[in-house]
Image 1 (tube, rainbow, N blue to C red):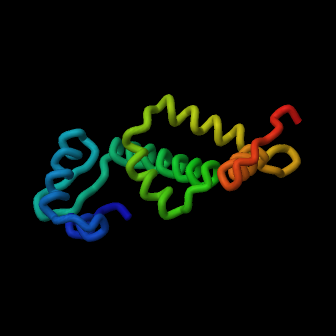
Image 2: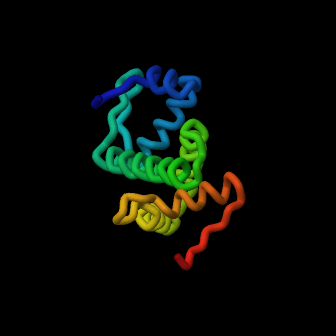
Length: 130
């Protein structure tokens, strides 16, 4: 969808419209949105790129929390919303590399994530020399 109204943003985020307007002023000042009073809100090209970046960070964090740490999806979504704005680019790169490392091996098994879950569930340590 290309445009959205302030009231739709307020409803979706469960906040008051003046809060949305204040936030939109800040975003417009940074060149991320265009918004005319009582008009639609439109992302600029820069704003769309930033939105994609934040969305990618969010999904990577959710993936890490759910698939590696075994956090339930609802908690992971909530936590990711908080974390995505605070985690440095360096930490995100490391997290992405860990996810790549912990991904399925050539035999289709997810040993790293599975071993960690066993450790969390019952304290069983792995024999990493295997």
